[in-house]
Structure formats: structure tokens, C-alpha cells
Length: 252
Picture 1 (spheres, one colour):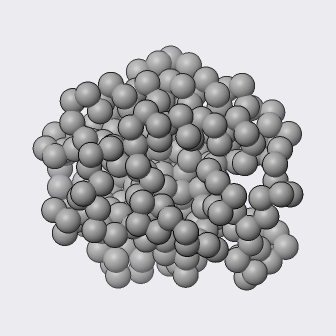
Picture 2 (cartoon, helix red, strand yellow):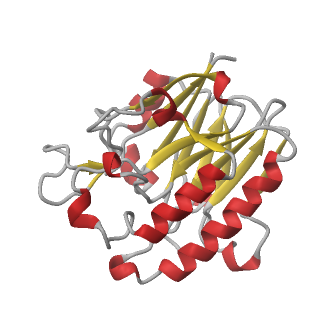
């Protein structure tokens, strides 16, 4: 079996002081996709023996950024979507393996009062098109922080968040479009009715203590590849960030 993990670490250097290495040694992932690294590769004063590291950092220091740790060296690695309008924030890394593509993504947040919703909508359309082109070649696994709770079951207080970033009709609609284009939400494929399953909690109002969270971190697989899913888990007890890791276990 192959174990893939994804975790928005909300600053990798900070997370290193909050149990990241213990997590890595205990879980021993085959692949670990990170979001919001908030650093440049040259700032790393740590190593992860046994892993190949692939970075995509934002031009703006201390902002956004993605990183993949993988035991198996991929056939190829591609950063960004091939579009100038999206190539400065370090939001995607695509690894090509023999069996499939793996895409690590940190989807742009629509921000307070949906101030960045217009950009988010453009990004969603471009990202969906990019994944569609990959999917024509071989199966695709997409993981990361999608910054959207798709359905009411995916957050604690849906009624109070109707026009908030991460639960607007527009963002939820784009997530549904992505799934309709030929992707399967691995967690809901196995656990369609599981409630109180969240991957992000606000630092305010003791949200994590009360499990008042949102499920916004996903593993999606292209339609037809779901037969390879052994399990899809949310590691809600893992601290170190305002997100917890999510895991996809593949049968081979």
C-alpha cells in the first residue's frame, strides 16, 4: 500500500517547533504534500533524509507556498499552471509518476468580504482546465487546501457562514464543477454521511476544543481511479497548525 499525506502547516518553520518531525517519523509517509510553507528553500535549516524535496515558493516572502516530500523520485515535476497570471504565489506542484499524476495545491482564499472572489473564480476555471488536460494522459490525484467546504455536512455552522469565504455559493459551485468534470472526493466516497469530520479550525473562540471546524483539505482522485482507494483519513488529533493532516491510502 502507498500512503499519501497532505497538510497545511501554516508556516513550516513554525510547525517544525510544534511536532512536525515527530509526525513525519511516526507516520512515515511515502509522499507528503505541504501548503502554506511561508518560506523560501534557502531558508531551510533542516533536512529530511530519505525524501526528495520539491518546492514552489511565493515571490512574496512569508506567504503561501507549497512543498512535496517524496520517497520515490518522480518522472517529472512542474510548478504552477503555465499561466503568467498565476505563477507568483507558489500554489501548485505537479509530480508525474508512472501510474498517475499527483498535484499539490493551495487554492487562493477568497478573503474577508469575498474581496478576492473574482480572482478565485478565474483561478478555479484555469485550474480545472489544467487538471482536465492532465487527466487525458493518465489518472490524477489532487490534494491540498481547497479553501472550501463543499456541503453543509462539511462545516459545523453552515447557516452562519453563507456569505463567508470558504462557503459562498460561488466557491461551492466551482468545487462541484471540478468534481463533475471527473473527480471523486475520496473521503466522501468512503464516508458519505460522516458528520463532525473537519480539517481546519479557527484559532479563535476555542474552535478546535469545541470541534467547530471545516473540512477544506481534500484528496480527490480522477473518476475511474477510486478502485485504488484503500482508505481516506483525517488526522484530527495532530496539532501543530490550524489545519490537521489528511491521508489517502492507495492499494498499490
